[in-house]
Image (cartoon, rainbow, N blue to C red; front, side):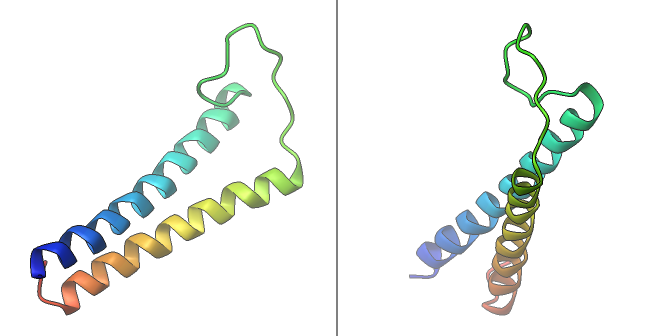
Length: 80
């Protein structure tokens, strides 16, 4: 039972951390180059609207919250 709990909570924490770090990295790349990673080279850079920017920061916050929750839960259960 403990191994399933560790895998479930640890997996959610890892997904949250990846969501936060990946979104931040994409935002930094956009700031430096003017386009998001994965876009074709010849494509015109597009301006990010305020709604999209709020959505990106929301992803970062949700990812960080999941990562912190996962680490705290694993620590309090003695699984870390």
